[in-house]
Image (spheres, rainbow, N blue to C red):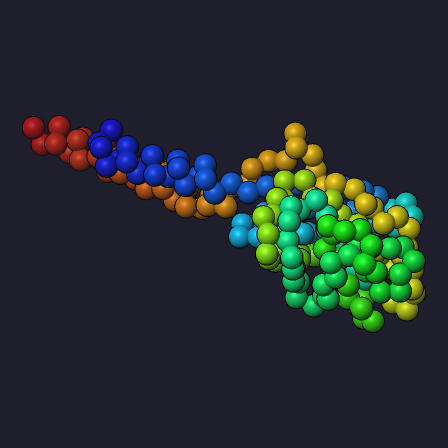
Length: 202
């Protein structure tokens, strides 16, 4: 292999290894919660199959609020369409977040809970002012069956998403890595074709 090819492979390997991100998943009462570390203090939460929830979540139609904890240190957080509270989540709170549970970032939809959808619901959360660690986040959720209720339907969840043994590094630069491998394959194919042409002409 030529030196330029070796250099390209080494560069791609470094990029692939250094751009990993945590991706965790938890299924509870037929609802799946997934978190992905997108880097730079951004955590993506995905909720799937909520309208088909079972157990004491059967019949849920709205998400009023949710809280994330065990995410390292932060002084602020933001999520489009939701209000941020540095507290936790209480089953008896009319707006979901009520200041309990230090170290949690709580997000509430307020007077207009978010209607659940059949498609995966994706939330991009931005944390600021600290050193975040998204390898094992914990989650509490406030689901409602009716848009006018003031207390959670069923379980608040309050569980960690994934576990260190099942959390898998998710390479954020995988497309770049795949493109590089494709480029190497193309270079090798062209070199073989050139050599074959030279042999045929001899």
